[in-house]
Amino acid sequence: MSGPDTSEQSAARLPLAARCALGAYPLWWRDRYGQDQESFLEELAGDHRPLGRAVLDLVVGSVRVRLRPAGMPQTVGAWRDRARASIGWATVPALLALLLVSAIEQHSFGSSTDAGTGALLSTGGRVAADAMTSIAWASIAMILLLLIGWALVGRLADIVARGRVGKRWLLLVTAPLVCGVVEIALSFLQTLEARVVLFVGGRSLVDYRHPLAAQVVSVAWDAVAVAGLLSVLCVVLAARSAEVRVRDLRGGVWLSQATAVVLFLAALASVAWGLGVTHQPPIPRADLIGSGPGLRPWTGVQTSIAAEWPLVSAGLAVISVVTARAALVARRSYNTARELLAAAP
Amino acid sequence: MLSSLAGGPKHGYALMKDVEDFARVTLGPGTVFGCLARLEERGLVEALAPEDRRHPYRLTAAGATALEQQLSELQRVTSTGATRLAASRRRLADGPAGAHT
Image (cartoon, each protein chain N blue to C red):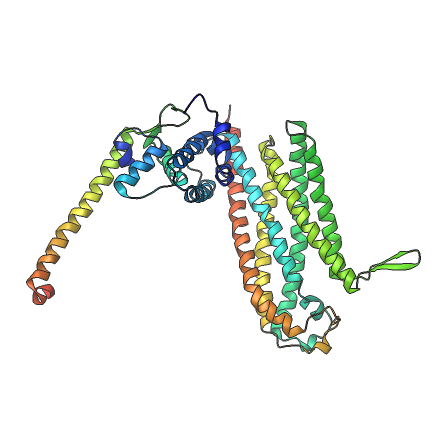
């Protein structure tokens, strides 16, 4: 090796995947073992060994370190950062859960059963209808929790804006809030099936019940969801570098616990919904209210649900477990940080 | 890892190569440093001053004692296994009747 080589220069020579894997470790770990691991990868590459397996090992190792932080220094900062990262792990996956829940709500089962043909529904069908209502409430609760979370993160990002990161983050903080409001408005439109007619110059331009208008609302929903997801990722990046105090995290800890409970209930409801729908005998198409040209035949919907619900429920269950674990770690880390703070001279 | 460090201080990559040579197991960086962190937490190894951005690690006195205990445990298991294997081979050589006694 010729001449002094800084950590940044050597890290820049590593492939992007390796740098991402190294960045997946907590800050205290990177301070302590980051350069050792970089050197390890460089020597591995120098010996012409494949890096893929090492990168995978780093990813698994980063998860292990986050679950069991062996050798973590007993400082307020380290435990505070661990609590902050855990809050992120407990709340951000709720966005993914929202996408899964919206996949459930895409099916026309809700509107069909709300049509009032209760006599046609078996016990399974009634269970599925109740579960669908619970899922709708769970999704509204998740959106509200995310809004509260974004407001909290917004406060953190405000601190960042006063610091070294810059005011551009504030724009990114406001984007999820706007997205959240639009999402709630769209969900009300979809839930109430309100007739939204936009008159311009005495002529109706948009009719929500029109198939094209419904399509536009559906695409808008997806676009808003993706925009919200991207914005939250940016906010998470901003919050990573924010200087926060321990007490700033108290709300986040409560939020992560509430998110874990809501996600658990949503996972249970999705199982009830799937089992209920698959045990509902086919309903004649003529008996379905709202069976317009945009609706698929009921038996087709059932076949589709039967194939999809185990995947959706499994996805929600995995997210629920991750969230619950992260919420637990967030609570413990927050308490430890407070104890260390109280014990400090 | 402790057996490798018993041969002298090593940094992460040298440790991995040494373990690969004598144990025929290839360890990745996540595993190596995860293990080193746990051993360091228990006071069995310690990091020395960094050389060229890498920390060499060495066995502590507690680490040497822990290694000694583990090796004697392993030795007891291997010697028991070897003794029983030899007896089993003798029974098999004596024939089916001997195998049932």
